[in-house]
Image (cartoon, rainbow, N blue to C red; front, top):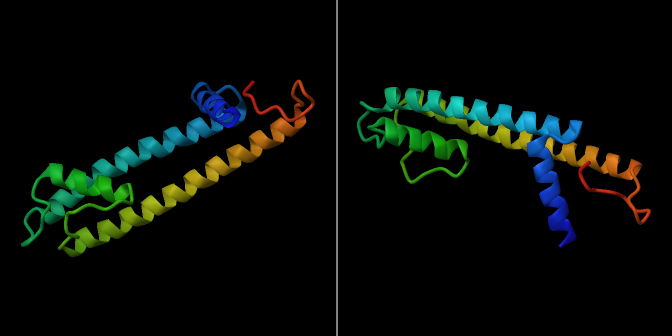
Length: 136
């Protein structure tokens, strides 16, 4: 149960920004989240405008466009068919590239955070003389 306790402590540390490493990770997560929401809305509007009048498209409403863009950005795709128009296809490629970049940035940010916390733990011995991984 100790790893779960440590994970819960680190998660609350990120939310509360208990150290500089926690604050940097929290700030990165906020920027990525807000940027992704903005990209999602802009891409949904663009997808709706590009696809709504195309023959055989399944994106006829703003709701279906928002659903499609959200699933593309989550990299899970959807049951909706791929875009029909050239502009819709370019938009799709852009969203896929953005999603892959965000996943890589998240992995890098979390890796950097864990590395920094590991260095901090090595510098701060715990009560039993071992490494202290508890948030300060």
